[in-house]
Length: 389
Ligand SMILES: *Cc1c(COP(=O)(O)O)cnc(C)c1O
Image 1 (tube, rainbow, N blue to C red):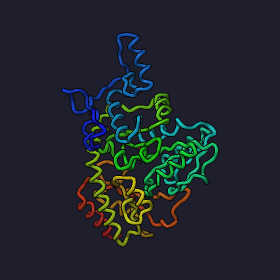
Image 2 (image 1 turned 120 degrees about the vertical axis):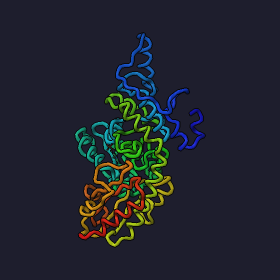
Image 3 (image 1 turned 90 degrees about the vertical axis):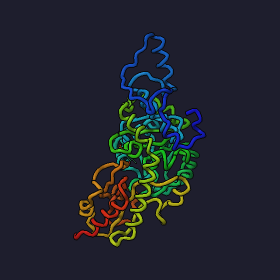
C-alpha cells in the first residue's frame, strides 16, 4: 500500500487493511476494551499520541485495529484526511453536524434531505437552541437564506427519494465565501460514485449500512473530513463515545471488497428497470439521475462516475401502489437499501418538504434494484402490473 496514489481505486479496495506478510488478507477482528501496558510511560505516551493519530490503539472506545483499518479505507475512498466511525448512519449524520454548532446558531439544510436528518434538525437542534431553515435543491447562491449567525450548510445529492442533483462546487464556493462549513450526506454515492470532499464540501457522511456493507447485515456510518473540520470532529466523536465495534468494522470492510463490482451491476439493472418502466402506460414519471430530462442530470454527468440501484416511479393518479407492491414476488418491502436484495416501498417524498414539486401528483414507489437477474426483475414487474386490480 505504499503507492496508494498511483494505483486504481479498484486495486486499492483489495489491499485496504493488509498488515505485514506473512499475514491474513483481511485485518483480524480485534475485540478489546482495555489495552494493557507494562509501564505508565507507555500508557501516557499512547494517550498523548491518540489526540492527533486516529490509528493509535488506546482503548476500545476509540476503536481497535479493525475499526482503524476501515476508517483509513473510507478516508482514502472519500479523499478525506480522516474518517470517524459510528454505529449507524443516523448517528453519523448527528455526529457530523453537532461539532460545528452551538445555541444561537443558524443552520441551512437542503429541502430534499433524508427525512431522519430533517427530524434531527427540527427536533434535536431546535432543543439545543439552533434554528434550521431549508433551501431548494437547485440553490447555488445563499444570499436569500444565510443570516449573520449561520454556521453550517447541510446538503445531500442526489436528493433523498427524488434524486435531484445539486451543483455542489458552485454551492460550496458560495458557502465558503460566507465562511460557512458544508456537510454532505453522500450515502447515494457511498465513496464510489461521488466524492463530495473533492467537490468542495468539508465533511462527507456515508451510511455504510447501505452499499459499503452491501449485504443487509451491518449497521454503520462514516464521517470523512478535510481541513479545519477534522479536529472538531475528532474531539466531538471521542467526547460522545462514538465508535464502531470490531465485528461490524470487519464486515463493512469485507463488503467493500466488492463495492465496485456490486455498484456496476446495481447501476445496470436499475437503469434497465427505469427505461422499461418509463414506457409503461401506468407510469407517469421515473426519477433516476441518468434519465434524459432529470433535474441536474448534466451536473451528475459532470461530477459523478455512475448511478446506483435506486429509482422512484410515479404512477398515474388512482393507481393502487400498495396492491402493486404486494403482487411483486422478487421485490420485498423493507426499510433501507444497498444490500444484494431488491426492495419496493411506497413513498411520498413531497410530504414533509418546504418546497414540494407541484408537478409530481401521482402515487410513488421507490425501488432498489438488487443483484438478481434483470430479466427476472422485469418479468416480476410485468406480472405485478398485468394482474387484475
Ligand atoms: C439510510 C440513510 C441514512 C441512515 O443510515 P442508517 O444506517 O439506517 O441509520 C442516512 N442518510 C441517508 C441518505 C440514508 O439513505
